[in-house]
Length: 322
Ligand SMILES: CC(C)(COP(=O)(O)OP(=O)(O)OC[C@H]1O[C@@H](n2cnc3c(N)ncnc32)[C@H](O)[C@@H]1OP(=O)(O)O)[C@@H](O)C(=O)NCCC(=O)NCCS
Image (cartoon, rainbow, N blue to C red):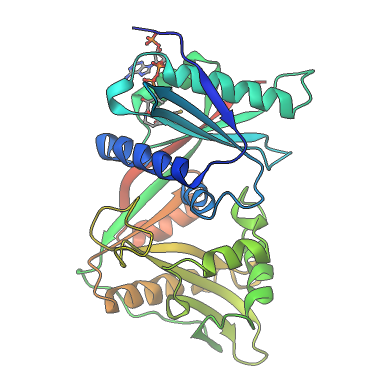
């Protein structure tokens, strides 16, 4: 049954609205088995939206929030990017279509109105409903991201570092600028990761889960130059510390970001860094590790497969054909 749906557009959310949105997202995540917002969107919501040019689309039924879309308009090259979910009890009533149609209107306005604006939709979990909705509105399946997992209870090989390279923990403050440069070099061709600024790093360093002991740096002994890093993260470790709202599960370790400087590619450093991080996560009492990788990044997928990771869930990005 399709009803007339009114979608409200907000530049900011109040603290109460943020709670409503996170409750709605948790209900959708519980029903679908995949949380519908990505980490950076949750961070921006919890930190009051910061200076991000985000547009919030809210659909209500009898005053209750039943649909939400987050439209990020900060990337003038790729265009706007949206994530959305409809409450499981309010689906197939036109809410998803109304939210995406409004997100398309936002994208058109940001593009100047003379031509359709670029817009990407992220579907976490690759549900048939997301595909059907996106394709019916003229989007194409564009990028596919895998979440991979492995047990930490099975044997983990010892890391074998290249000669003259050693590992140490990240030092907040003194390593910040060098790490941002290393990350940009390691992810020069990556659409999102390579663009991180010092501010992007600092936002994460303020998170309750941030722990420099799990942020490993590889440096050349002769001159201290940073050659690679493995930033691990623990999800759901500290109930009440802010993670509980979107992670109602046993703690799990993540290969959060792994990067190697182009000059050190092919030396086995990526494997050694991954193994060292897995040992660290196991030493924290964790049973499982997970990571995200682009399906098209065949060398990274091969590395993780070799280290016993297997595909767990798939996220898909749909792109509007303009
Ligand atoms: C995807 C989602 C937002 C759709 O919300 P919705 O309010 O149920 O969607 P609508 O009622 O507007 O459906 C619009 C069209 O999408 C298609 N569609 C939606 N759900 C479908 C399903 N389960 N099976 C087949 N087609 C479906 C249909 O073509 C539908 O039109 P119809 O009902 O006239 O046949 C919702 O299922 C959801 O929250 N999923 C989890 C989060 C997610 O995947 N978000 C990413 C979306 S790109």
